[in-house]
Image (cartoon, rainbow, N blue to C red; front, side, top):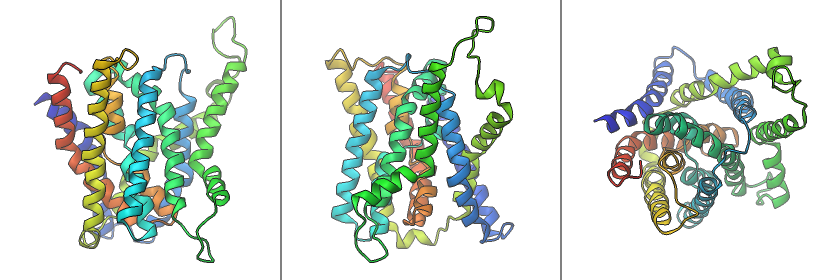
Length: 339
C-alpha cells in the first residue's frame, strides 16, 4: 500500500491540474481564445525560464554518476530510433509522426520523476535524478525538436532540408535556454571565489537578484500552468478519431520503454561492474523510462505545428496508465532488492 500511495501521490496532482483546466474550458469560465496564447506563453517564456533556472541551479558536474547518465542517454537514443521507425512504418500523417516519435522517448522527469524519486530514495535519489536530468533534459529537447521538425514540409510542399532542421533546433526557445544555462555554469567556474564568504564574487542570485528572482518565479509556474493549459485544450470527443495512435503511443511509452530499458538495466547491473547501479540510482532510471509522457511534449507539438491534440491525449492517457505501471515497477524492484 505504501508503494501504491507513492505512485498515486506522484501522479494524481498532475491529473488534478489537467482536470482543472478541462473544467475551466468546458464551463466557459475561460474562453477558447485564451488557450492558444497560454500555450505560447508556456513554450516561449515560462518553460525556457524553468530550464535555465534548473541548469543554472546545479551545483556542478563533479557528483554525476556517469554510468547512470551513459545508460540513460543510450536508452533515450534507442527509444528515439524505435519511435522514429514506428512512425515511418505505421503512421501516415506527417503531423502525427513526430508526436509518436517524441512520445516514445520523452518522459516526465521533472513533474513525475523527481517526486517519485524522493518517495523511493530520499534526498540521494533526488540528487541522482537532478544530475541525470542535467544531461537528459537537454537531450530530450534537442531530440524533440528534431522529431517535430524532420517530418514537416516547407511552404512549397517539399520536405525540410537538414540545414533548416538544424536551424529550427538552434532557434528553439528551450534549446536556447538550456544552452544559456550550461554557458552560465561554465562561466561560474571562471569567477573568483571570495575568501570571506566562500562564494563566487559575482552571481545572479546575489548581484542581480531581481533578474534571478523573476526567472525563478516564471520557472516555478511553468509546470503547473502547462498542466492547466493542457487540460484546457483536452476534448474526449477526439479520442475516437485518434484511438489507433493513442493505443500505439501509450503502449510504446508506458509498457515497452520501461519493460525493455529497466530489465536491461537490472541485467547489466548483475553482470557488469561499470553498470553496477546503486539503490539510489534506480529512481533516476525509473524517472527516465517509467514515467509518463512529458507535459511539455504537448506544448511543443502545438507550437511547432504538429498534432497537438494527439500529443495532449498521449500525455493524459499515459499519465493514467502510469499509476498501475509504476506500482508494478516499484514492487518488483523492491522485491528483488534493487530499491
